[in-house]
Amino acid sequence: MINERDIAEKFSPIWKQSFPFLTPNFIRMVNGTQLTEVNRIPIPSLQKARYDIVSELAFTLSERVITSDQKLKTILSDNKAMLNTTKEVASKIWKNGNYKDEDLILSKVEINEIEKISNNTLEFIYKQNSKKITFRPTLRGYGFIPNLEADLLIDNTIVEIKTVNRNFKNSDLKQLLIYFALKQMSDKANWECGQLYNPRSGLAFEFELKELISKISGGKSPSEAFESLLNRLVREVQIDSNF
Image (cartoon, rainbow, N blue to C red; front, side, top):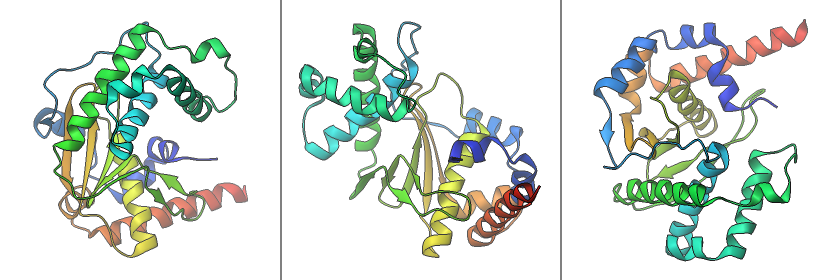
């Protein structure tokens, strides 16, 4: 089944037609001049830590702290609960089930990274001074695009969290645009803002939707741009399936 990452990384001609000014130069400008420092201390990825399980566990534990009002240290110190949480996360990210019980044991290095990333993520959330926080908001699919799950909705801002050792890429922003597009088509309305946030670098890119879409589409409104994008994607897939 196709997901938002596949769509963001493929269909290059359609992305260029829909958003001709979403170029490598644009994202270089974002990384060079448009980022806000959220966390003072960056967290480099260590070779001994497994990137995928660390990232997803850090996000899951951040969610637990916010939704259950528990302290992060308390959650991390409960070995039985941590093992159960690790099992849940492993089943999501290693969907083929090709892992052993020993793969669920976290090293001290991994636990340390998880704690640091969670703390940065929680600092990011608290700094938003939000009235409402929704983890993993669901979005209704469109055409061949299935229902999707975003990372975080803070008031009227949709947030994509990228726990990576690199700058933001065009495909990261495209992934957020897919969420905006699905929201537009299902509700005939949209969130006001979006954010890309990297808890490893401690940096975020925040934008106002109408302003961004006008810049990268050449003056279109969000509703016009997103309807055009999704319909082009659907037609492309239908044409391919006919052959």
